[in-house]
Image (cartoon, rainbow, N blue to C red; front, side, top):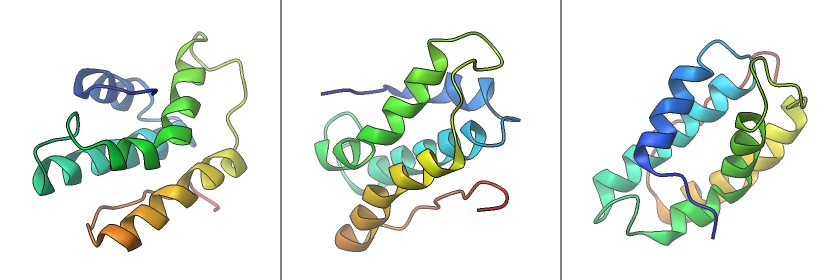
Length: 105
C-alpha cells in the first residue's frame, strides 16, 4: 500500500504551500493525518484513513517526482476526484477534519 509518513506530509505542505491545487491537497492530507492521530493509535497504525487518502497521496507523489513547478499538470478535477473517498471516510467514521477546497472549485 502506498503510504506517506509524517515527515513526507510536512515536507510536501511546506513545498507546495503556494501551489493552487497541491497546496490544498497537502493541507487536507495533513488535516487527515492529525485527525487520525487524535482519534486512534496514530496515522501509521490505522490503515483506513490512509486507504481513503490513497488517490490523494498518489497525486501528491506524482507531482513530487517532477521539478518545481510541477511539470505534470495536477488539475482541480483530479483533486476533487481524490477528495471523494476522503469525504466518504469522514462521513462514515464521524471524524472531523477539514478538506481544503482549491480556489474556484
